[in-house]
Picture (cartoon, each protein chain N blue to C red):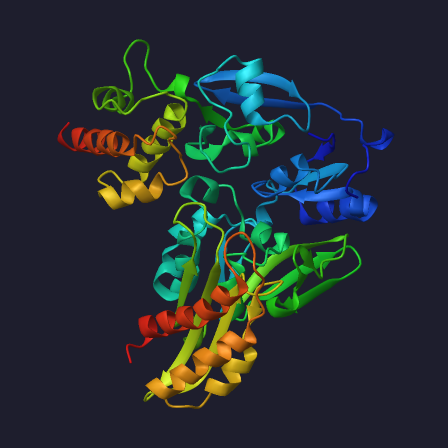
Length: 284
Length: 169
């Protein structure tokens, strides 16, 4: 494995100062479950690893001012075990439960899952329908970005080389409490999604008041299906409408053929996943 | 960045770490890119933990870090400073095997044995979280530990037996 130096800052400020000095030479390390295989395959050759796992402020799940805040160091295991998420935001619990396997989940972090920017990122998909906000800090500036504007392409995000994620937030709203996540993989364990779908919904007397749909593995990055969302908003749920929505989903996704599935199959299954998720939320 | 050879400014300074492994305190000086599995096997000669896939797909290198199962091939040795590690060698008390080890032996849940240390450690972590798991829960929890002899039925039986033994005792 390539050689690198190692530092272990204790505060965000310390980490940001080091990042400012080292820029692209440095790489932030948390759970390492994606990072180490990348370094070994020489897809990444950092000269410095900044181990942020001792920065307490980046850990844990909290509630404040009508928002849920996830520290980027929150492990996927912590998401699975959170009573709060299980009871009130089941969509995150469901996605975390299907993530890799229980052992990897003890290391893998939610921040790591986002910055890796895999088109298949399991946690990004439900965070998109929760309307998550990413809090970013650099020495020069602090900023907040909507998750749907965070990804630029496979492995690419808007993070500058002197910035890091310091928080992930979403609102404690009705729509966020009513969601479902489905993942289709070749098998249960360790599977990278062939396609995944998150759906959050607010319905009143069978009419869709608010709807958010996001998908993984059907585009160069996890995406929101805003076209279909617009189409479905303020409409009454009935069979014909759902069939129309399924067709629109197959058109709106932008998948490729790869080792896991063909483009055609992904277009087809995208609509099916939507139907499955919808039926879980409201049996129609 | 990719492909660039490490230059002078990345000469690795060793990292001093102190940790407890199987109840014993150890101090080591490790390179930043040393993997925990290599330190455990090559420096501490605890060869029970196995190096399998190296990318987090097989579970053969599983150890307990502060009581939680983690993959030692995806853990940098430098990051275990101050932590407590248990490897398969740390489960038995003297000559007395851990109940999970006994259950694996009794149920012939060992064929080639390569996956066994990881299997047993993950299984002990499961029972710590959930003392009475169903078969589905066992299979779900153990899903990242691969047995290429495919002796899964015996492994699941061993874990079930260990769990029920715990209940009655």
